[in-house]
Amino acid sequence: MLASGAQVGGAQVWLAAAAALGLALLLARAVHSDLARRRISNRTCLAVALLAVPWWSGLAPDPAAVLCRQLALALVVALPLVVPFGLRLLGGGDVKLIAALA
Image (cartoon, rainbow, N blue to C red):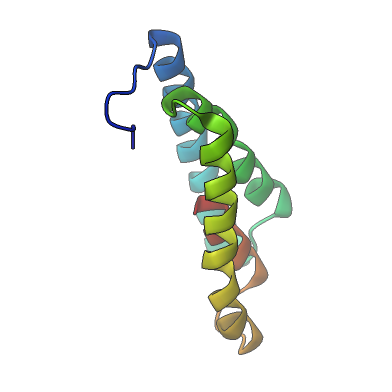
């Protein structure tokens, strides 16, 4: 996760830990919603994606570069999921959540 030789301060680690806790709570909410109603809300997917900012800000020596890389990775992950979505094997919420987690 960290680049070799990178120094990370204690406050940054706490920020990343808080983001990880928030992510765990949001994923629990997504699982509950998906099992109960077969839907994952756009708000949950957006919140998961936005938690990447404090996560990478807390752990990466250069957060801007890492966030750009993660955004590209999300696109690369989401594109192949268009086929199962089109075949109705995956729902839109599933595809958005997977991309947000990339």
